[in-house]
Image 1 (cartoon, rainbow, N blue to C red):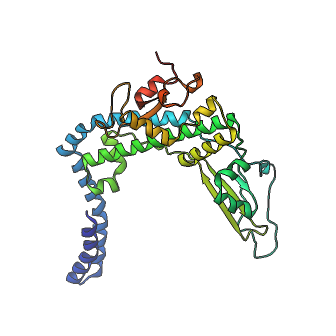
Image 2: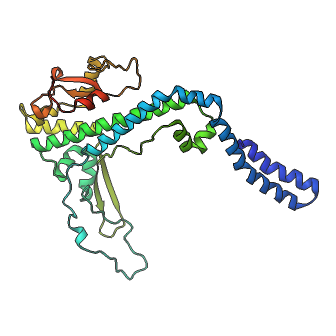
Image 3: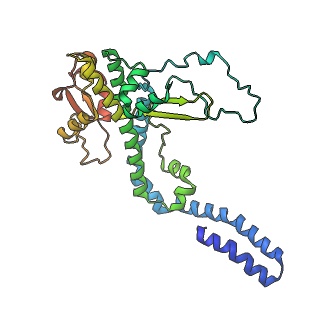
Length: 332
């Protein structure tokens, strides 16, 4: 039953019945009866809604949207499974797993509230380094996590950047489609709050558990006694990876190499290409104007692996279906 009505009955009914009967046991019985009836009433309302002609009609109307959504969820899984989401590592504590640490202090006040963390994405450093990393994250990320200024590393960064960008856009597109389905069906609030999983299952939507696995790098300072600790975290999202690529390009002073050309593929360039192509797939003609939730991707006509450059004339906008079909094939 609705929350306000449930609260009113839970408070008012026992008082009224108890006072009328002059027996406190009647009030206790009324409370138990309300608590038992409440979930039953919710289930009855839920079943009535899912069996209603209105819901069944709306479910049929969104069937094509649901099918497209589920196809895209499978595509998100492919991007996640095939993508690269790791970069350099710190050497501090690389052999920490070979030792066992134990605090054997006999004092009651054990000063180990902040314990150093040893992991490939964590660099244990002085307090000054941690603070400097917060002011110049790209410089310190390169210096302490073996992100060297050479074409091979640049190619790896760009591979991670492209995969993260594609996954960001695909996950966001899936979420917008789910919002579109909810807006179309407009289920009662209690359905989404209490029976969300059942709602999606009945509609036929396959929910994706995939999120964007942003690599996260940490500079960490822990005092000798463990009383003080500070850290700087750097998340390698699209803006950070674009800035890292641009910095490496300047340092490498690249020429006409695959790694250097791939470095031109920033979020800014991808958005410019999509606008140039009128937010439309140049192969099948699908467009955002007709399909607002269409997932578009920027493709190298001649793949970088085959010598293609990241220049406007070698870039095209494709929908996710056409891009998945094309792969790394050369144009006919």
